[in-house]
Structures are given as C-alpha cells and as structure tokens.
Length: 306
Image (cartoon, rainbow, N blue to C red; front, side, top):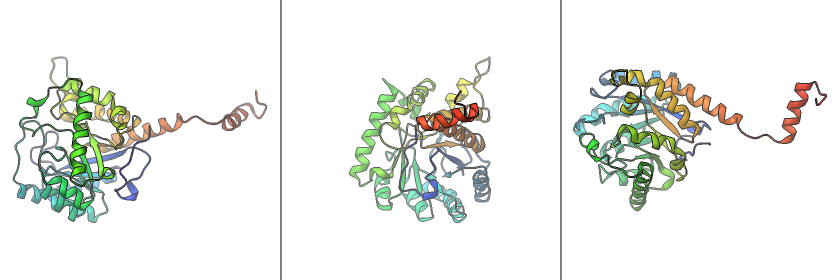
C-alpha cells in the first residue's frame, strides 16, 4: 500500500517510501532523552547527525508532552526552538515544529519550518487553525483529548479506532471552517495520548482504516509506554525508553507496509532500514504480466522454456 502524500511539502520529500521524521527534543524533561540536546548548539548538532543517518524531516519541540508534564511559558518555548529551527533550515533540513501554540507555529514557519506538528490538533489554541490557514503550511492534526497532566484521565473508549476516526473527522470539519485546506492535512492517531497500553495496538493493527480516510498518516510510536509494557521483564517492570528502539523499528516496518506517510522516531538508522525493507517487500509483491514471467522462465531454463 503506497502512502498518501501531502502535496505542500518540498519536492525532495516526495519519495515513494514512507518517510522518517527524527525527533529533536530541546527540553530538559522529555521522557526518553530529556536534557541531552537542551542547548541550541547541542540540538542543532543532533539534528545534523539525524540527517546524516537518513532522516527525511526533523521535528523540533520545546515543550515535553510526556504524561504528567507541566506547560512551559510561551516565551521559553520560543527561545528553545527558534534558534534551532533557523539553523537547521539554513543547512537545508526540512524542519517541523512540534507545538500546540499558534504563536510558536507562526514564528517557526517564519524561520523556515515547513510543517507544524500539533499534538492537540488545534484544540489547545483557538488561534492555531487561523495561523495554519494563513501560512498554508502542512499541518499534522493529532488525536488529542487533553494536556499531558490530565490525559490519562480521559482514556475511555468504545471502539478505539472508530472513536479516533470520528474525533479526527470532527477536527477536520472545524479546521476546514477556519480556512485550512484538506491538502494541508496529515492525521496522527495519537498513540499513547489519552490511550492506555492495550488501546494502542488496534490503532496500529487497523492502520489501513485510518489511511482509507484519504489523508496522509503520521505514526509516532517511538519509545512510548505501551512498548515498555510489551517488553516488560519477568517481574513486570517496563523496559526503559532506550530499550524500546527495536520494537519501534518493527512498528516502522509494519506501519510503512500499511500505508503510513511518515514515522516519527528517536533512533533514526533502524527505522530508515525498516521502511526501506517495507518498500522493497511491497515492490516485490507487484504482479507482473505474462511476458515478464516468460522472460524469467527462459532465463532459468536456458531458453528452452522447460
């Protein structure tokens, strides 16, 4: 299944395979690598390393969305992300800004960001849709029910896939009403956000249903809690974030084979390999016509046809 593609991104992101988005956390408290890339210089260096490792896009965020995280002042978020976005864009990187704030999104686009990755899908800031409409930027609308400090209290679902699809459809209606065009939109099922561990697996297993809604889909499973629980030790202790990269790469391969436009990951090399394997696998499944099969048969039998 070939991934759907948002047409408003730079031409070099029109690859036929699923893309890989590398995470650049400019925060002291992210759940997996908080503090490692907190200074602008460290964050830029990390982003350039991810590019060398094969990342197609870089997602720069200045506010942690880990469970229980508290919000940071908007001025602090701006100070964290803008120098990094500007420097990476100047080096030719396709940069995404990971933010729920319209003011940060607008400033990031002015500094060279080509995509806004909003985990709230516009629900956290009423002005976000207007900024997206005015700038024409590609916009990731994630399924979301509340901020990190309360999201675990909002995890009640009937059929989680049907509920997520319905709520994303409601967001699309509201975004359209604000002037956002469908060809700007990428959808994200919001793995781990207001979803207990078991609720994430149906969203992945039934990914083709999300893709069938006609929009590019971003999958962000990297190092999340539900993988820690899956990989728990004999005593039930969840695997730590850095021990979840192998499982993340497995999800990247499966998501790619089911039509995901992009996977968002911390460990880039493994997922770059994973999506390339998925692309090769899919390419080999394309049926060939009778003439091609006859040529292969002659090659095997020395031209005797036997």
